[in-house]
Length: 314
Image 1: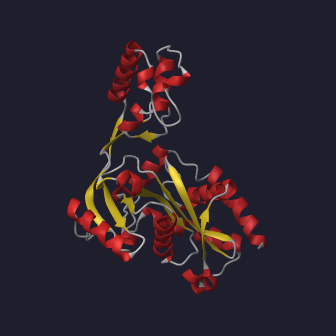
Image 2 (image 1 turned 180 degrees about the vertical axis):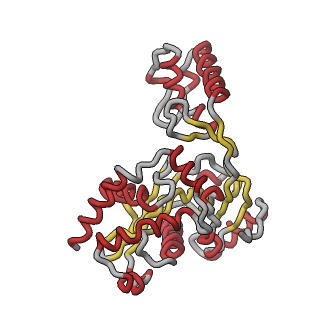
Image 3 (image 1 turned 60 degrees about the horizontal axis):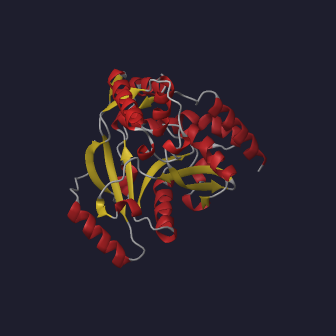
């Protein structure tokens, strides 16, 4: 379709310009936001007219679209992941793919990308299903649909992703968050009968990144490998390759006196960082087995271990 390349080139240019928003500017925009609907939906409204113009769609064309018109696909190639990343930057309110993406999915209409969902490792593994949880849990990290897609595409798409994961991977527990800051109410999760685990998730205090004033981080960032490398540079310590790998620190390889300097400096940097108060997030979970028997067993175990709350009214 000739419109498709034009659309993707246009989308990419927007991602590099208007939608390359810093954490601070995004926070300011959210704080000034006064619509009743969530900020994610506002992104659909803001991009609709541009999308119609680029794709040559009319309102009548859009009204005729049905979920069945879209093709579901698991994303594997580097090129497709880059395309999905550009899509998330335009349509998802946070505009990033998350910290630890592992599984990528798309929905397309006649080759045009209309939806992206990304699952990944949780920032911190839970024990919602006991000690085995880390082996079977994935976070629904990001998800967005284009402005012109059917309103029910998101819920249909998400369930297809979950079923694909259950059929093709060991994962059986799928967790997600909704952010009251952006007026997210978790309607998709409610519609799919997710468990609601209450509004008590996530740190209520975040910090301005001392090394990038446009970025907001949690307290965990101050104990991350990348930050420790920065601390070493600040302290005039020459970093050794065996002190860390791509995933974590190897404290056993670091001399005790240097370890103390790094840890003390980490505490100092956190204590001196500018703090921002955030409301806790709402947490959701969905459990699915490969067959009815496994599903029953997993859900029974989940319900016995966790407090399940009624869905919020707002």
